[in-house]
Length: 142
Image (cartoon, rainbow, N blue to C red; front, side):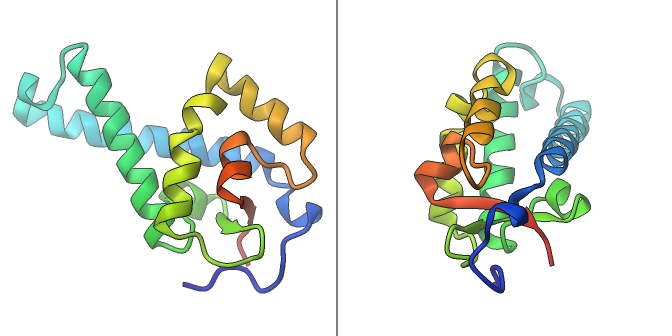
């Protein structure tokens, strides 16, 4: 894994719009996957509530955790929007960092990501709460 070629600064993290686009794209990818899974399996895939909602959350979490942790800080959405997750020192995101930042997405997502937006607006490197605790930042991919 490559990481980033230097310690990211505030200018490197000016990617809030790309982060939103990537998150929407990743959510759509998981929804398509869930739909494709539920068609042949029906309710066995958790198509009915509340199991469908829980399965969606688990699949979305695992998708983000594994891709960020194993694919140089990128998900498919981040790759499309040319951004990635790195540590505050510029090292590659690993599974532990990805786990911490994504577990804390629950906090950031309160009130339709209002907590995450306030956190990004009030930190120098535009970090949401999960990024602060995981010591990660999202930067423009080089």
